[in-house]
Length: 321
Image (tube, rainbow, N blue to C red):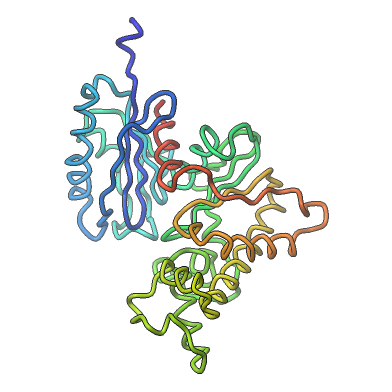
């Protein structure tokens, strides 16, 4: 087989709770085209596959058709590397087991591989991002939910059944805030996600009724993590307290994760990192404060240096490269 006939490209898909980002990736890790669609998981999965096909197939055709492609890699909540299924994902409305890799292969005529969305982001960081050259690190994705990817000795930790490393669902507050989709109480995800920041802001406005806040200019349904950040930038005290509270809980949790795996770095990724120092400073302070002495001041806590959508797309494409 000549080099010219070797497939040059892969598709990388990052399926999130709110939107799905996808791109065409070459062997050097360049994203040549990318786009996004709403995940719209309240509709049947077949609707999602068709919407994805409508956007993605023209990109594939532009690059010479499926003969030029190695396959499709996808990162998705509760994506199982072993089975190719999304299984009981809390942040998606599709119930039970969804054979997403099989559906992609059926629709596109390409082999498809699946992993957890945060594991895909970790693979992207390992190959092309802040973790390049590292053998021990954790990625934490702060988006609609809280995802995580753990790499130890250069290998992704997936465990016995493909689901290891769900750090977002570890309990950080005894009998704490209810996770409406799982029924658990006090898990990290209900505090440190964009959804959690919104909920904290609503609770703080209620518990600080006598205190003025720019957040009171918004209806409850209009409050988002971005709204809180915008108000914090303008000096709003309640908005800043929301990030202090979020960072404190996240930092405590990260201290636990450090003492479990002793990573070189923890890389924060996802929409909530746009809050910059408002989330980083209280997180770093709380992490260091709660570390056992031998771990103090050893672990880098950094934001991903890849574009928000790129790490997961690149990592997903690496599944088939």
